[in-house]
Length: 180
Image (tube, rainbow, N blue to C red; front, side):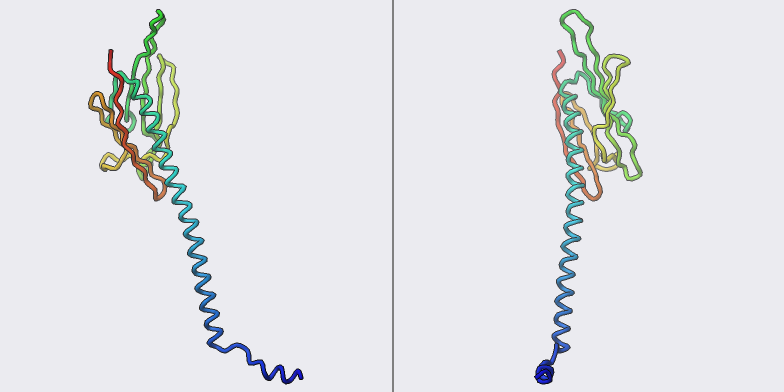
């Protein structure tokens, strides 16, 4: 009886084995491509979100300060990118308070990416400094770069952030308060 079972079993043919190997290869390749796309897509998405958040944060602070401005000066170099100042008047007989905000681009690397620093002078010599955005792209030879232009009463600021392969550029137009 055992001999009869062995004689009736023939095993797999060479064609069947080749088909199984080909299908296994196709499935493995598809799985590897899917995993690669998930990892790459996640990195690109994270880089894009980081760039967007950096641009938004810079836009928020510059807009906030420019709305209060009495004077705005756009610098011609990264160290004095933008200067905004105003006076907070004390109508109750106390001293007026002078405010100056200097925005500078610092730690610019060879790929033209640096940090946007906000220095707030409140009276003299009191200062507050903070880096408000990273990955800021500055290249004065290009149009798609961080830049500022002031034509009274409108300040136009374009901010570009680059993180890996992701780039985000936004333009803000801010009209400052009228001088009294």
